[in-house]
Figure 1: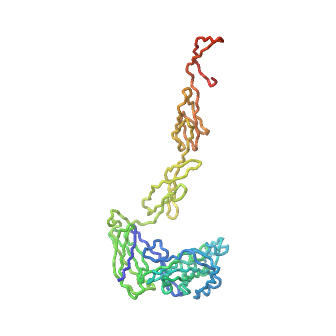
Figure 2 (figure 1 turned 180 degrees about the vertical axis):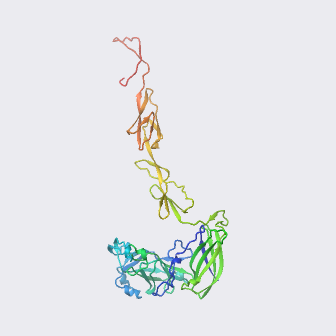
Figure 3 (figure 1 turned 60 degrees about the vertical axis):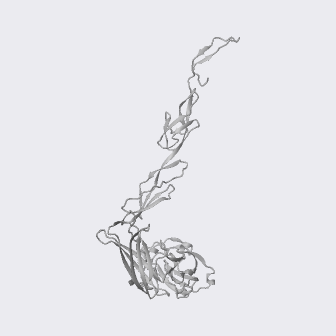
Length: 492
């Protein structure tokens, strides 16, 4: 019996949907070119399963604008010799070619709705066909696997060849597709992948081309290997009623495919929290017949009951988890240089998160800065809330070596107290002065203005004590000492 296991992680009972749900069914895709039928795919997912085997073709490709061989390529001749590539350029995938310097300056070519045209000057405009090439080594350990070519997106149309064999065409709205290229991509071998892309044909891209009908492979291209029996699509539907008395379950939609005539499969589906606790699980056995073409009837639906309350306690954890629905709002707190200091999300309508991080701002000629709190929130479209730091500017009190200020660094409006060092007994501090004209003293205090200040004490000479003076005549006779009391002035 073949075991196929799908681990589905759900947090707060919010269930994710695969992009493949929205891709076109191959039975409705008007494709009649190439040897491989297209089926919906997820290319370059946000989270790659550890069981996936993928070779990403992101990066530099050989590139040439159409030199007249486009019509031959379109009708199936995919072999181009090395002389053809002697003057090749290099271009990055994913990306549109105009953004990488292909074309000449000109006005953009807008989409077909003439009442909604908005042409504008561009540095590069090129309309026509272009040829991409990539040499790819297929891993040797892919022996026995199904090998897929996965195309994320092309504008407007792209056809692909492997070693000259026409594989398939992609010309759709926004769906991503894969092609079973097992017969043409042998493990251990290097294959030549050719893509012929055109932006001069009718497109289903619609308003994506409002400003310009750009061209190129604008999403990722990959090779992927799967077992001969594989999970082709999985998506989860949350069926949670507002009434606790009604059944609550997660409906898991799975499409299992096999290249064998028939395969017995055991499915194990588990809903887990991010920390690994199992919320609910289901096991069942089914028999799968050969199905490579993507028949919708092959979908299997598994209903996994969840605890009948909208809140439940996770196993082996004393933590209550509630199902909360609504748009997600992002909250940002900015640092002193305008960068993002902290970022959190919450469901709109629930309590807004807070941050314990403290912003910093470098000192400048004006002064240094102390964090004083956060501003009122600013709300932006796109469910974004931004908080900016409020700063208190700190100024310096400069004093001489013979006096001190308390505090010697202060915000505007702070009362500063000055103290002079002990002076000789015959001098005293008569007042204080500052180099700045707006400093007003009240005794030995002043209120800090909104700038740095330099202060110094004003010393005065005290009244002299009683002085004894001896007088003598010309003969050296010392008379009686005479005591004189008075004030010694600055002139002595």
